[in-house]
Amino acid sequence: MPTIRLRDDQWAKVWRMLTKVGPIHRLPESGKVYSVSDAHIEALRKHNMPFEQLYPHKKEYRKEPWVM
Image 1 (spheres, rainbow, N blue to C red):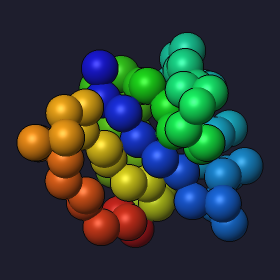
Image 2: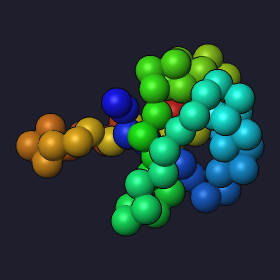
Image 3: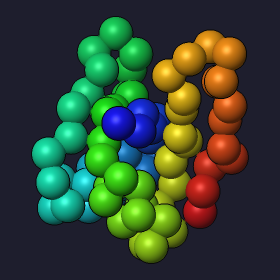
């Protein structure tokens, strides 16, 4: 499952949109980091919502810029 981080200044707006798409899971040890589905990622991109996609393995760790 994709893992994303939400920006503090846009968190409430993005959170409401994500919960309409389906269930999401917060990773408690990581702050505002969530495990989401591919449908969530598609919806975020469709609505130009800011997020940072994280990758699970340190070797593969790449950051996409905040998508707007």
